[in-house]
Length: 148
Image (cartoon, rainbow, N blue to C red; front, side, top):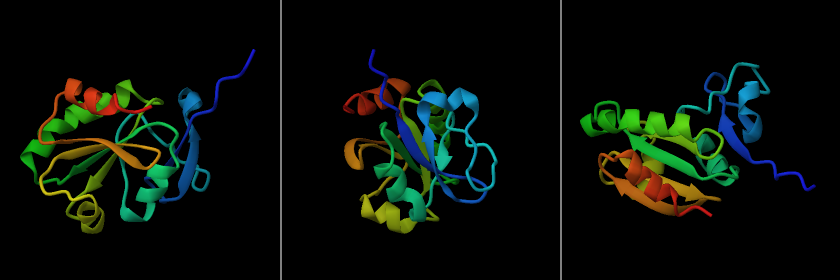
């Protein structure tokens, strides 16, 4: 019998910013940062800055959904619970990350973000879908359905 392929994701530690490779098939074991040993929670969106952004997109075997948002944005606050629920429901199958458009304007400009919230799905570092504005769970699932 052939073993299932290990699915991994690259994520920054929210405490020390060290990049970690996480085996997504073992999330219930409670992955920890290899450097500071604090927990890595992938059942919620992970905040990512420009220093780790490309490594996360290209170092993840699963689709990555990026929520481009700002704290002051009303529609961003409206879609946040939907994004949180998706991250929880699809933990291990989809990696959900957040990029603050006010703090990380370079990443924002690179992807032509003109309105927020903007949610972009990536597979192996390539954009596969985009939604601008408040989104329902069904709309986000449709964006992610383009993943192979």
